Image (cartoon, rainbow, N blue to C red; front, side, top):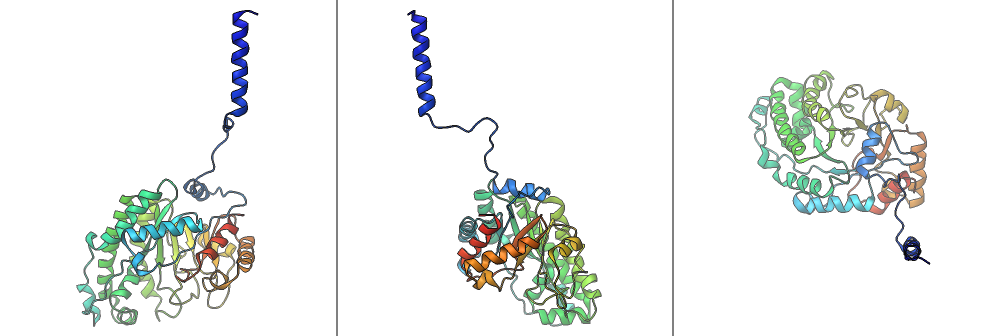
Length: 344
């Protein structure tokens, strides 16, 4: 046998041995599973993954986890435990009450909080973006200037003054809009992908004259909402019924946001998710009553309810609650609901 023949046989045997013992590599053309970020961006483009519904639930953590690095750590622990499809950062930097608002003209004394006021909250944002940006979309909660105004004095004082002299109250709302813009612009600079934009004020029984909402609250809502929606890919309009239910959503159907989160139960009827999608002309998020089985049900009851909701929902849908779930809710219940939505 020639030397060339012996060399060829030895090389061939070694190659065959390697193929039998070497770790198996993915075949050409195989693609890794998409990240949560990639999957949600595809979903936003109208390309939901068959058999997989995105899902997320939100809750407030204990006071010691409200801001700064402890808050970031707790948010990420919760995100990874529940396997939810994006990170939603709770806003906990409340406006402190003031003692000088006694009549409508006093609202002009309200000053905008500057960037240093938000620093504890921004530390949370920075750390979460640093840890999770490549993995998942990150959205920051913002409350409306009207909701902040209720924190600075009281909602009763705010309502009375808006009925008495809304032009004077408008000056305070404008200061709060200015402060809100400072915050959201810094969040965008830090790398968030959007905002969970909460609105109140058009809920039932709030104002005897609906023009108060349309002429004073709504314009203050829309300033930051329009800016972030034009610059960020993933913004959720949250029509918040925490204070009171809604007779209808007529006042907010034209609000911006790529997704709408609301309650299908109105004061006089129940909407279907198909009706909500047609009304707002965009995808929806919700389906689970925050006071229902997601809070107090068994795993089997949760699974049945999730499947019922998804069977009636449009194809482009995110499973969630109608508002923030109770902070004492067992995380395992939320994880089970999310796993069911994911088809597991």
